[in-house]
Image (cartoon, rainbow, N blue to C red; front, side, top):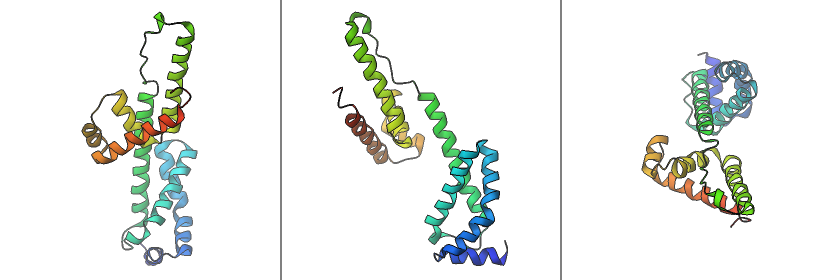
Length: 181
């Protein structure tokens, strides 16, 4: 680490925007290449790079100027990449997992159509309207049947956070499915 980098980090820790801008321009391209190599998608790499610098700025008061800045941003971006891949994996695993309860064969055709439309609408709301964290917890709870404690351990969250996210998911579902209720 150079003295200039340490000086800039101390200034950033104090809230100096121009020092942060210098660090941004010095490290942006290197970090972008680092992330792009991992995610193999330039748009996503750009988003993760931007989010990394945003998190640095938001947490600047806890920054340690004597430590390598690239190590800091590499760790943050690696965690963001990991989060992205974990969310993608959960999304793919559960994309079509809202159960088909069947029993439509003894119903009137109109009831079948309404049931199928309702099921598609539930899937749409779950996949499009729920935030990632909320969706993942809701699917683990309602589709996979995991307990709140199991979900909390699996995702390294508090039970209260799991309960709040399930409540939030149900509230969003109710608000978006008023035509069916």
